[in-house]
Amino acid sequence: MAGVGPRLELRQGQSLVMTPQLQQAIKLLQLSNVELAEYCESELEKNPLLERDDREAAPVSEAPEGAAEGAGAERADVALSRDDFSKTSDMDEAAHDNMYDGEPRKSAEGPQSGSLTDWTTVKSGNAYDGEDSLESSVAADASLKDHLEGQLSIAALLPEDRMILLALIDAVDETGYLRVELADVADRLGCEIEDVEAVLGVLQGFDPVGVGARDLAECLGLQLKARDRLDPAMQALLTRLDLVARRDMSQLTALCGVDADDISDMISEIRQLNPKPGLAFGSEPVTPVVPDVFVRVGPDGAWLVELNSDTLPRLLVNNQYFGTVSKNARDKDSKNYLADCLNNANWLVKSLDQRARTILKVASEIVRHQDSFLAHGVRHLRPLNLRIIADAISMHESTVSRVTSNKYISTPRGLFELKYFFTASIQSIDGAESHSAEAVRDRIREMIENEQPREILSDDRIVALLTADGVNIARRTVAKYREALRIPSSVERRRLKAGESAAVASR
Image (cartoon, rainbow, N blue to C red; front, side, top):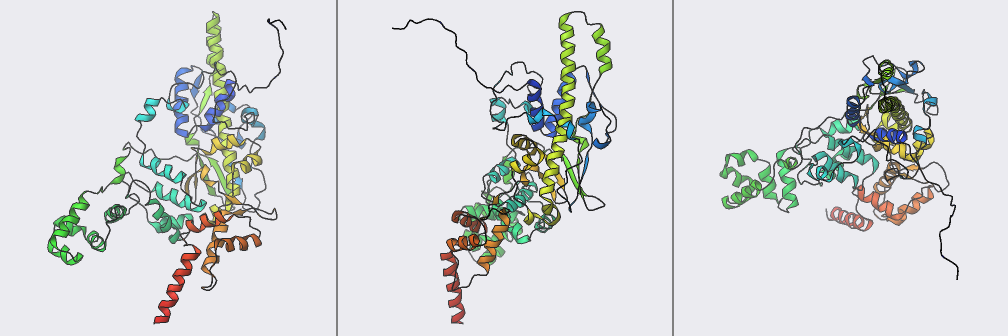
């Protein structure tokens, strides 16, 4: 039997160690402009070597060498031609060192291995550090917009419908009412008003019941419909709420065709409803969304993409002050403290510069891909995912994901979060360019609209026709798109058209 005793073994393995500086750069990248401003204010209070830069921001292309200390506040213009979207943006590629490219491609949201115990630069106990306490998260009241967007995230909608719904949610006030004309939304997004009306129906199906109504009568009607109490008499009553307010029973009985007792019961039901359903949610003042990037058409017809310099913190490192105080530092602790302050200040300013350039680079690439949407409207969204952008700009998908979250872009079509430009695609049979989901959806709509009463197209038949045209699509996808278009099944359509034919024949 072999003896048991201590022995030495040599094992070789690999592990990922993220430096505190890299961790800080990644952390800053995912902050919104409001969170970033709060963080920089905290660093200004803690670090005596940091100070605000009050100089006027200069374009990146005109920045002199060695001016990285203030680059976090710079304004950058990138001209993107509609005629040549294969050109690279006018950016300083050398400035993109390994700060973000060293990030692992695997999910960056989970914990990363490595020694992070010495990372104290970003940890400040504020909400933006990603370490919210359980008490604060439970106590915080969700706003109505957050509640609606949460339902949007799980809704089975096509990309263009999600864009429309997002625009409608942005137009809902704190009481839950829609404060925008549907024609204005259709005009801005470049779609048909019928599409906006259809998507409004989706919004009005969200919780709380009554949300998305355009007036009091519609709000009450939605709630009564949910209770299965919106009969013809109640519908007539809702058209004259002024008579209800005056309790004009004689006119109401004549209008609704019921007796006074029924009118009293109907009024009692209405009083149980909530005329302002949105007030059940957080009532704190809504912070307006400030865009991180602007997109506009230049004089030559090219898209101009520029950072919003007003949202970028402008910080400088006071090297002169460091030189003065370091001469008087006598003990080791004081010297180490000043050295740490200098390193942290330099790295923060560099991180802000990298953050600004990375946001600009990602936004510019998104504009390249979604040029048709900007020019022609929501129906022209192109298929896009994180990998396409990441490969085009030689970055990791996790970096692109961070950039597109909580970052907003102001376009001629409206204000959108960057992540909303990523749309689904459907592969081709022969390996050609993928088909956009909305294009396939329109083809399905057109097929059904043009079908003959004697030849109603089943979902399987639609799949066969699309496959013959080179579209690789599953039957369940066709069914999902058809349902999203609110088109009945082939059995229901056949029954409806048979009934229409019978009605015509009887005349």
